[in-house]
Length: 116
Figure 1: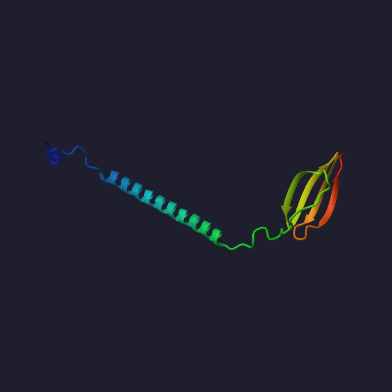
Figure 2: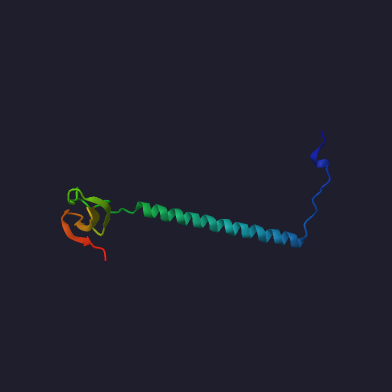
């Protein structure tokens, strides 16, 4: 076997300018990696902060168990927002929208949808 130290050095010696360029490249790389880690830590901290915030009981504005629409009515859509439930339904050829209170379940308003 041959001794690795017996081989002649095949890598040429770097010039001072090349060393300076490599030094700047290393520093730039380290700064970039440092900024990446700082950003990842900030994103992780924001996720942990948002997850740890205690919000009220989910769906607390809506305690109703059922909504009343006329018998034979077909529900087209139902949307819950701002403590109200809006139900669009079709009964025969007529389409209507009913707005219900989210806590009591009482109907606030019914709006018939008419075509022009």
